[in-house]
Image: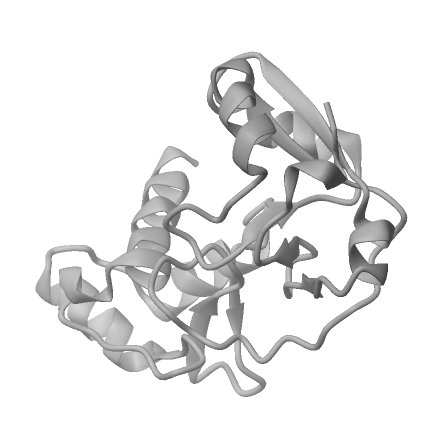
Length: 178
């Protein structure tokens, strides 16, 4: 199972952040040709076959990756630092969404709100449990409650990625309950 996690992390690097690591390019929507991906991975001594790739896509607990309808292309579901258009439709959010972080970022968030930093969007979750998992990756989690419905009424757009992550451009501090 450790190998699957290791390969998944490598695919995240390639499909979200640095496709040039293996000399591959993605289209404007983030799609990469599966056959080319597997060939370029092999050329880098990262041996992944189609069956293993399908297993990673199907079993990833966060559903980080998605195939197109005929499984000839693959992309990351969200979290890109390279500019892509995932063709997501604006969606009316729940009244509240959540964001997991750690205490060392709170003062900055109180001052500037949540920003995407190097990513294209701020990531939010619909439930506390997911926010706790996200915040726990960097230490003891601090959960922020986002007044998403109020933000939406004030003109902020929200999107839902293929794996259920809520996305927005930024969250001004006035919409955050600390």
